[in-house]
Length: 169
Image 1: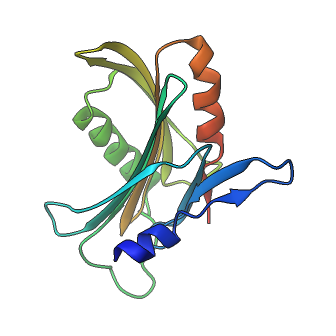
Image 2: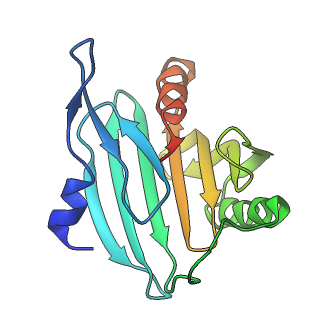
């Protein structure tokens, strides 16, 4: 995806209350999320050749991220989400392990679809221990991850509010 197309996926909007927000809805993934301020944007090519689009915002004691990972090849006409919700949850568990999330609680998130799950746990970094909450949707041709990393109860509410903006397009 060209840089101009990526930027087109991230355009500021104004709510009826007058607040500016930054929706992230890349065409490669079937989900979107809304950032409360302008995030930074990065495009990379994964080890498998698939395109990854990531956005990141650090503000008010939170780190808010979203990532759309596109598979190398589309599975063709009629490609659907992973048909077995257990397969999606297994992939979400693999991603959770790869991110080194400790004490992870993983549960289905059927409000977004059978291919989605929610993770809560702890990240141990050189800067200390942080809480992480994430929502992931794994389909046959893409993975969409939204996560919030926070350090205390005061920032937990903002993290939860961010995660609640994730929706199916």
